[in-house]
Length: 160
Image 1 (cartoon, rainbow, N blue to C red):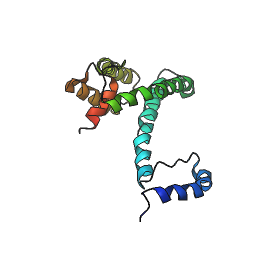
Image 2: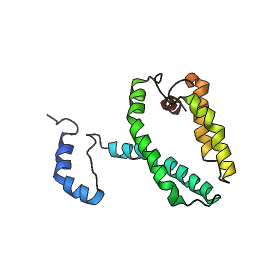
Image 3: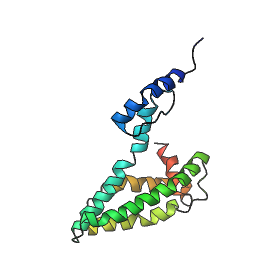
Image 4: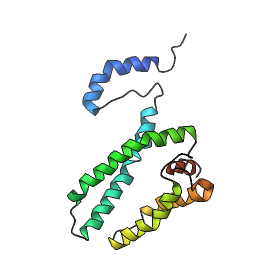
């Protein structure tokens, strides 16, 4: 008789958890499938570069006004905290495939696209990084998600 998939993995993980934490900090066993860590890293890590580029774009625009990047940090942190607070609600919408109760609609973001471009232009910042994000918002609106939560972008991202 074969052990169920993952049973041995849990035992091995438990045996080596202290060493893994010493090497990698906050270490978590994600399950018995050997590729889950490889999946989770880019699936969750995909938020990093867009968030950083957003901060860098703000810092570049700030330079044109004599505003130090360090002066933006407390406000950027507040945005990150707000994002952390709303992620569970977005996750619930995504898991339910129901975007009808969203407070931040695709149309709301659609209305702000020109402001993004104007801010970049005024701040002498390359807006090329915004274009794919704006294209996703437009694609979601065109697919009938205008009144839906911005989390409906999940649907257009899932259909290349």
